[in-house]
Image 1 (cartoon, rainbow, N blue to C red):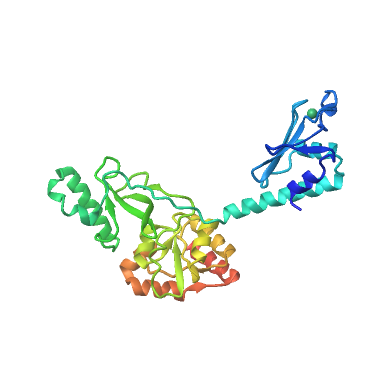
Image 2 (cartoon, protein in one colour):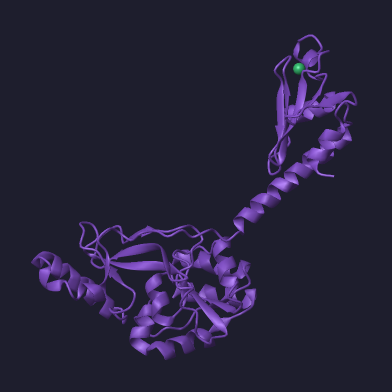
Length: 331
Ligand SMILES: [Zn+2]
């Protein structure tokens, strides 16, 4: 029996059903609230979505229950006044808590709906800008050049899916769209010169960058923090140090072995812990001198060699990951 059915089962035997859905009976609350007992069936119980609620039209007492919420003190009082034994009340109080935590747990591991989100107004793909360059004022033209130069410098292709927006606050930023099934569901605008904030982003929590790019015939998926690192080796990015439960769900759905490559900083240690918790493998490659991230490695070693190092220096067990992390984060 559901909690609602159990509550209904304690309604007084003498009751009547109204066409509007109320079950009416002599209210059980009034004399507990300093009012004369009801004799005119002014207590009413009604279905309320998935839940139920009680209203007394004599003393004004109200109580309700919704699945996913706890059983309120008022509902427990009501049950007791209707004659439900304490052990039954305790049992359904616990049951309500369990349903509540199940629903919260489910919420945490439900893949969110990713709605379309527009890019900053005036954004065009860099390759589209090529046709409009002659019309740009000199100062904006210089900023466009800086952005394109940044893309080159990261060993990426300016003709790929990168945007630029000449509006104040964005002109010195590279706009990377967050796509899912081809749709744009967010973006980040990365400053290409010194200055803060480094990223201006718009995204739905739980998004994983570059899932659309996981079309290769690989048996594994590589997980990194940032979008530029991700693009340089066709990895996915968690866009921060934290692997959220919702993100893990999307990554796991790929059905491949997961290899996490953390950033080599304090936040990266947290990423490693979360990788272990998710039973992912972790790669902490011995990069050559001067290489601090995946993108650097690609510039120095090339894409294939970088991938080879990542895959061949992967640890799978918690113990080995922890041992390796101890050294790796020291250096
Ligand atoms: Zn009452």
